[in-house]
Picture 1 (cartoon, rainbow, N blue to C red):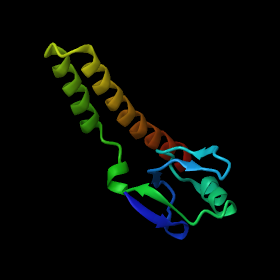
Picture 2: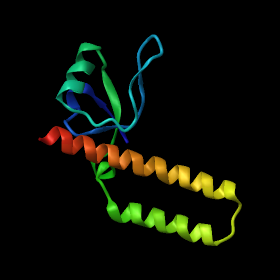
Picture 3: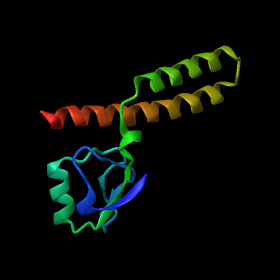
Length: 111
C-alpha cells in the first residue's frame, strides 16, 4: 500500500482506505477503484491524497482465489470448530469481494 498525492492517482487504482467526510459519513469505501468521476470528486472535496493498493496487489488473481477456496475445503475436512470455519470463510469472502469489485469497476470504466 502507498499514500499518494491526488496528482499521482491514476485511473484504475484501488483505495486501501475508507474516505470519511468531516461530518463522519463514509464517502468512498476501501476497495473503490478510481475513475475520472471519482478523481474529480476528490479534487472538488480538496482531498490532498489517499492510500492506495499497489497495482500488482490489485490485479485479479484467479489462482489465488482458487487456493483460498481449496484451503477452506481442507479446513472443513479437519473437524475444526465451526467458529474457525466461519472466521476463515469470512476472511476469504472479504478478500474475494475486494478482488471482484476491483475487476468489475475496471471492466465497467474501461468501456
